[in-house]
Image (cartoon, rainbow, N blue to C red; front, side, top):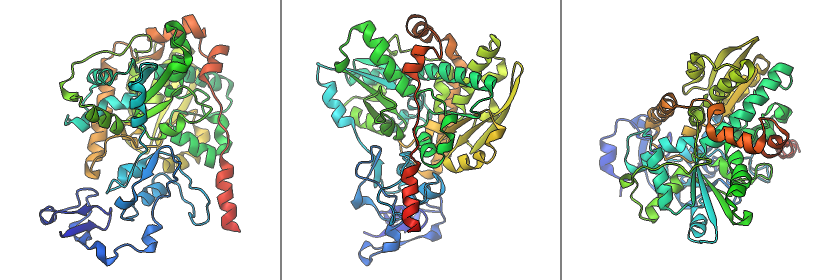
Length: 487
């Protein structure tokens, strides 16, 4: 069989008819002149090309490589070095440096890089009646999983998704936007304290585990600037294991908590001792595989609602799934915490921090306080914003393009379709926020009840103990590599 290969991205065309009708590469849009005849028997790949591979450890909790599918095209290394900003000499290092973001997975043309799958083990728990298995749904999942079932890009399938998870026999199906609202209550309160005291500014968000790990390795001098508030999944898991478990008299050793996420870095996060609560993270791709293997017809399912107690989320929680959303949600709450008044309309549509671009900025005025904020996508852009970090009071950081909507656990897309698809997902989340009856975390009745009956108030002693954490430097791991290179 005649095969053709794109020199730019490595994509292989196995059908000569596909090649004959090409004008540009369907994966990277490179010109047809760069697509050449490929004969594997001629040894197309040399040792230099093999050096271009991203180094994936066998114990990496997020991603894995299928060696016989790898064509050593260099795409993964290009993404890791030039987009994710991770660069080091693999020959001099004893272990790889990885922030677990999975963007190499999203750009691999042959599917040689894939998420580390955990769903098989999870199925065993679902079939064991001795365990009470919960699952929480991240905001960005509800606007992406439809891609895998033939629905239009950005389709908002929240209620159908709940039915699918019930069909898989999960005992409780929760909305992670509740955890997002709890994060906002604590993080916005934390921000207000820092602004008033003028200490440890700017405050950086800590929801993105890839960014947190990057900060620990390359900018450990900024650890005091990271928000101490746990991520939504850790807060959600913590409250399931305490508040929910106590109210329902479920034995602690019988609860298994799962999150379905758009992100493979979350698989790393749940293994961190600083962030307990969740036991498993499955990606959107994994969930689709589970549904297919269990012969559940997603498109034919009727709508249903999340379980109560941890089942309500505000519109502010929903927009956590897109870049700028965490910031906008936090500022809505911070306005109320400072002025005791509801934020004006412009805080419900902060256009300057919305959209898909590397760095987005805004000037904010709340009461007597005026300050600048920024929302950043990608570690390379983080390095740019850090040159002027003193200009800002609040900086949201997400590793992936568009935020969680472009995470490494999302459905794979041909590169030319990515921008339009991310726009559709983003618009769908903002539309849901605009249509929500509750658009701020502090009005969420489930959140109100948790504080009233369990936590007292944001930043209370109990809230600090359960919902906050600290991070440690990982700079030594990077330093060792530099020392080896010097030697």
